[in-house]
Length: 491
Image 1 (cartoon, rainbow, N blue to C red):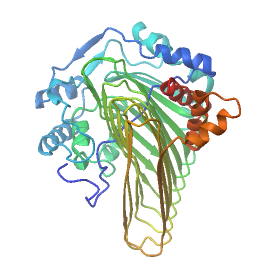
Image 2: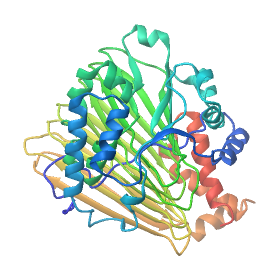
Image 3: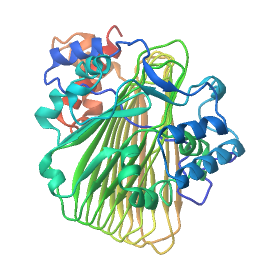
Image 4: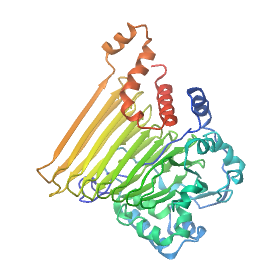
């Protein structure tokens, strides 16, 4: 993108958007979570049945499409996206991406094994990796459906029979392209996130693979979450899963993504696209907790189109990665639509977290609430970059934005870069922002009650992120709290 996309009169994300985190959903108590945290970084020797050569070319794109036996229209979309990618310069705003070398990356790695609904049929080396992350324990305990993606392919997808009987579809996006081509063609990178949205959405459109397709019919309400895990194991690799979620009128459900990768010296790229369609009176909650290793560029585009009286909820935890650029976007096109954006970002040594939210209102009486919390330590950098755009005629719109940054030492940095474009007078808009250190008075007060300085710091941080944590399922709340505690140990 040559220009800052906040200037563009479109839905464009001010950059790619990210996706999920490493999940340890099967662990219900802190001790088990800690054991899982020590093991999730386990690295397998790369095993694959096919991969493309390094670098990005038309031949690589054709190889990916041919290996999946895709229809001609999808190949044409891929090649069109590749042309857009090559025509767009790198973003000239935000974090520095100059070290990202597209020629050194491998864009498609097909692991050994085949797609299955039976966990016992998953290859042993993948089976062990996901067992350590809580699959299938989590599935048995509280998930309505679960998927597992390893490198470029989803090898496992399962959903409760009672939901398939109700018409719910939950499968890999590649599989959906084969079984439901007309639905995929209608929604895939058309009006929600087109390839020309930004440079990285164009890259994604050219080389996408894997991800989840979720279709919930009219009036169906799913009580338990559906979840997919993403693992990047191959070094100097790009993962480009595509998530397509359609909630028909009156439906209600929660979808969760989790991501992780082993640590390599070489940089890797994660550039996903998430497209969500929340139809009239539906309620969709999308939760993403990512803890990529610190050699990963996490650059994604996530957007929802929210229709009349629908509710869209974004809940995110951004803990890992070398550099993250993530700005989930809600486009409210129906009267009375609502969007909630809640996010925690943590940046430690060598990490840069540039994230926020985009709220675009195109209908009257819509509302949105944005709460963003960031923590920086060890020279880490956090930035809230947000956009509120209300078009003329959208009377009665209400938007409240609050972003708070907590700095744990003198080397770290936190910034706030909000933008508001208000085209209507009869609206209510609020923006609050704060950045600060843990005060000596707070620490002294807690220490006077017999609490150590380290424990006092943990308590203050826990209270700081509590508004987001309380919205997460118990297993995820425990995991994020423990991850942050481990990061601040020794301060």
